[in-house]
Amino acid sequence: MKTYIISAMDTELFILITDIIGTVAFAVSGAMAGIRKKMDIFGVNILALLTATGGGIIRDLVMGATPPMAFKNPFFVIIAAIAANITFIFVYWKHKSKKAFSDKTLAVYDKLFFWFDTVGLAAFTADGVHTGLLSAHSGNAFLVIFLGVITGVGGGVLRDVLSLEMPVIFVKHIYACASIVGAAIVYVIFYFTGSAEAAMLAGFFFVCVIRYCAAHYGWNLPKAYS
Image 1 (cartoon, rainbow, N blue to C red):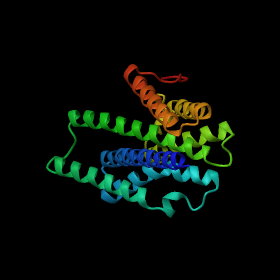
Image 2: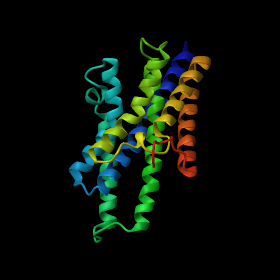
Image 3: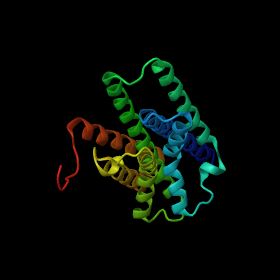
Image 4: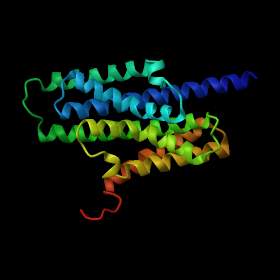
């Protein structure tokens, strides 16, 4: 009994850490997208908050969990706001005397944006699958994997739409496909081992690797024309 309680506590701590990582990563990517679009601090915050919480809100609505957790427990909203404002203040302080971003600076921001976006995608994909596995529909593989994918990509889609960009999941770098593979891996490993930590770590790892390889080698899905 004691071992079970400790194991449950360890799992909850692991999930909390994963959620914080995903929230911070997506909040920073949303803030950077807003900054590049020359939004004011309010716009940057809204974009960051939607990026960090949008996927989870959509997941909760699909599951019929209302109001969504982001509104019942503002802890992650506060974390996202802190990350967004730190990002805004840093960029404002560093570039307040400049009228435009240099090409070199933009290249650095692009790399940072990619990695924060990738980490957020990986963390929230794993978390979404875990949420589905805890529900009454854990035996429905399609639903559980869908929950992982929508949790992972939902916030990024909202970010791209509100910043007047074509959502990344539709155009490049195997974005949603990486989430699908990662979600499937989490589900399968958890099904065979019963270990939430091992399953989520494996899914997280594979999403990051697939995203890196896609960006590094220029992998993209076929298009009718380029």
